[in-house]
Amino acid sequence: MSRGVFSKKLKKKVLKNWRKDPKAIDKFKFVHHFLPHPEKRERTKFLSSRAFIVYVCLILLLSGIFRTVPKYFPGILGYASNVDIRGLFASTNSKRLEASLPELRLSDKLSAAAKAKAEHMFAKNYWAHVSPDGEEPWEFILVEGYDYVFAGENLAKNFQTSGGVVNAWEESPTHKANLLSRNYDEVGFAVVNGVLDGYETTLVVQMFGKPREVSGIATKVEEERLLESLSNEANQHFPVQVKQEYTYRSVADVSVVVKATSVVFASFIVALLMLDMWYSKRKSIFKLTGKTMAHILLLLFAIVSIWFVFKPGIVL
Amino acid sequence: MSDELKHVTHYLVLFIGLLVFVFLFSVYSHNKNAKALIGFSFSVFYILWGIIHHALDGRLSKLIILEYVLVGLFVFCLFFVALGL
Image (cartoon, rainbow over all chains, first blue to last red; front, side, top):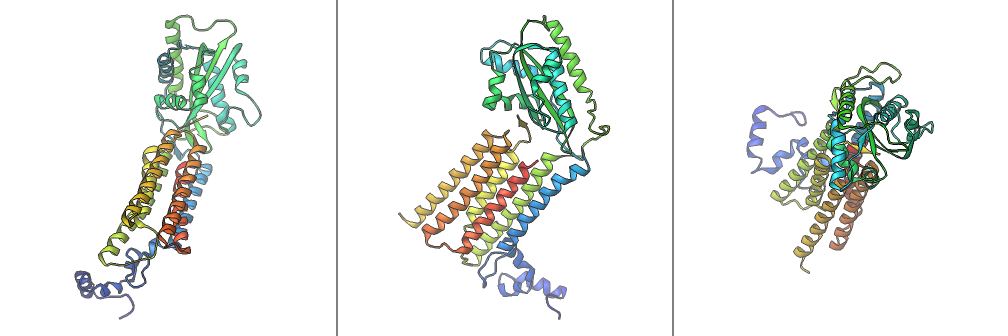
């Protein structure tokens, strides 16, 4: 009989009697990839130092794939989004009312400046207040003919809901300062879809201002009309020119793909550690290794953090 | 302090420490750089916990240190992938 080759009958017998004859299972060498060796007194092969080095390399390789693929196949991965201007405006003013501050008026000029800024970020492929060419947010505001005393800008990307965007701004001290500033009377929004760094995403730009001369929206009716027109414009998901015509529709939500990959990987290790702990206890295998229970605890906390706490949305 | 009580105390420190890091992740959930720093500290905390725990137990060896470093590195890499995009 060649090494590791058993007849079906023998295999069945070994599997049936492995509790009575632990040595019999040793013949199945592969089992020690999952179960600790009673004589060598070491962890399973899949939990050895070598295996962890392989896992780390695999994760880095995966990370490289996730970063490289969108550059060559833009738009395959993206972020699902349901952000709308109406929701952003309502949430912003709701936060101000909660802080006993006057509501902001919606400005068509600030909204146009915000839209220009969002399109500029897609066109030049950057994510910052100041563009790589040194263009500042104020320039977009001035181009729209908005003469201001005070002005400010909040940015967000990869968010799923309007409420999520405003909550994230509120949680960040610098963005909150803009959101709840007494210096501003007006606000403008832009929600623009496009491809940034190869990922299909939604950029949100919020611009604040205090005009030198009170102008723009005078009545709630006109404000509602502007809101309607801005919302319709955003809902059209109009293309942003990025070297070529934007026709991408992402196949998968990148945040879900990445989270699922990490969690499945971590769960595999947790399962191996649990198996290791159970088998070692059952067979009274004493090993001079680190604490299995501590490793499991660490990985469970990592899984919880990645799956439940990590959010793709970023504010700037 | 009995061995059992010592172990419970060590694990309690680990549990609370990890809980604090998860809380920090949730506080800075929209700040990528902060999350990367917290993820790094999370792994370093665990490696240090492992080394100190085994040193106090008198069972510290190079192989055990290597094991904690690799597990910590593995977890940091998981965070790195989840954060990097």
